[in-house]
Amino acid sequence: MTRLKKKYIEIITPKLMKEFDLKNIYEVPKLEKVVLNVGINKSKEDSKFIDMVKSDLAIITGQKPVTTLSKKAISGFKIRQGEVVGVAVTLHGDKMYDFIDRFINIVLPRIRDFKGLNPKSFDEQGNYSIGLSEQIIFPEIKYENVDKIYSLEVCIKTNLNNNKLAQSLLANLGFPFKKTKT
Image (cartoon, rainbow, N blue to C red; front, side, top):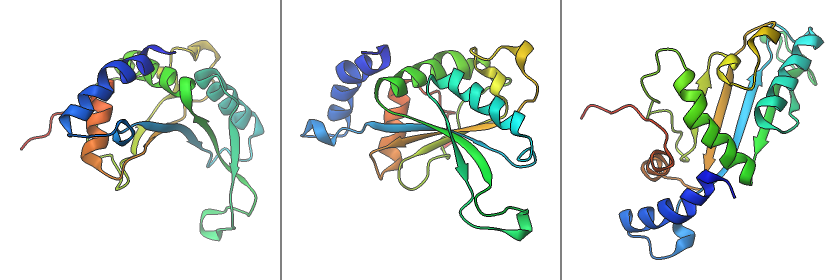
């Protein structure tokens, strides 16, 4: 069992049950999955770039990424049906908790001029998205081996439809949110 999962079960679950007056342990908010996503736009003809992104995501997550294909042709964006438009990895279970632990404690402090995460980045279903401008903030990526710098997105899916509960869950897990002015 990973360190963060153990903390969630032993400390965070009872705290959230008391804080939100939940009667049943199955009502407690929890994480369902984490998705890392890289969009491929101008470099879609360059298969070397797609392979580099796949290998970087595999190193970061410890899991093989999949390519996402366009569902339909959009002439305004010069996209044909069935063309590669992105690379994604979905994490569940222990790998998810391990990734989030490394993300909070190692990756976020390495972001230049980091002042906290935006608490307004929740969607209406209690999911949180974080955009990262560089893949080199992950310590697994060796700077000498990087040809191109690209951005990626980390989406954290919870089992909630309430942003307040989801923010409380992520804050208890250790996500450093900016203080909002009231």
